[in-house]
Image 1 (cartoon, rainbow, N blue to C red):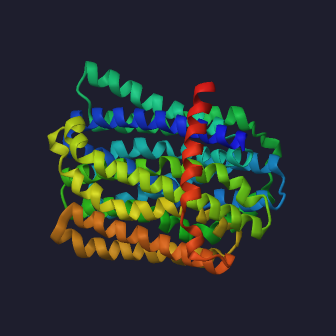
Image 2: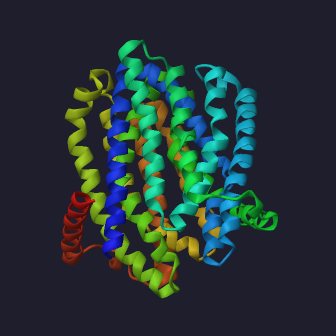
Length: 432
């Protein structure tokens, strides 16, 4: 338990630093580029992140499955590097061709040079995704955190320098994003030490085959969080995208601690029998619910006065969208640990159907609401879709585990436990 507390403390501490770095970067970008410039940059980086998430073939989920079944871990590590670079290169080329074919009428972008810069980073960024997962499975979360921190520093530091000595441009911001997602690979390779002679073609084929079974669902899951940006880009203005992108970026901060808790709990959920995994999932979900309520409530209270003060009055229009996203974010944060339990059930088509259903809800509601309510309508649509996914996952978990829905709700004991863990985290950070 003490080790787990220290791991959570380290993860939360590093992610808190990343939040600070991200906030500073966001403030610099917002004030330098204003809503229109921020929207232009954010569309490019959104295409980059979509390329990673759609192109990764869900191989990291296959890694989890193979790891739990005793596959050669040296081969999994070597395959993670090789597959990451190869799959990333193919995904980048496919994305570039697709955007070019669709043209500016469908996906308006600031410039193809900026898009090329973002896509050039995809192979290394994909390898980062795969090796991150391997190191988490090895319980080397601190290395993953360090690599992420390096990326944050490499983005924030030059941004501050450029903003101080020159006029910041969207192209410069895109370049720094590309650097920030590429350089962490050096840290991960040094820690994971993949050896090319451990490359196993047969295992790689199994990983791709297994990953593809989950890929429809995981691609839909990612698009659930990013489709609204592209819909807004096509139906509204770049300035509106800039306002909404800030709301989304700030809203995602509410997942800081719940994601850390879920990451640390993953080995417990995979390293035991079904009954033990269900019990661990229930306990972690109750804790995650408390944290999600506190995080989302704090964000909703702080956002109205702080956004105009920190980012400038031009971004005051982001506040209503942020508030509208809150219910869905609460549902997702509370149920975050359930996904790992569902993964071990090895029902990829059922898992995919839930994500696809939520994505379809999101797209349909966005198309219906955006013409009338703009970015607030998009936020409402996304929030409903998030809650839909959470409800479907809870329903499946309850049916598969035999637990009662009430078992997922925290009580006085969990509140007291959460307070104790927070005190433990603070003490661990002071002694680290």
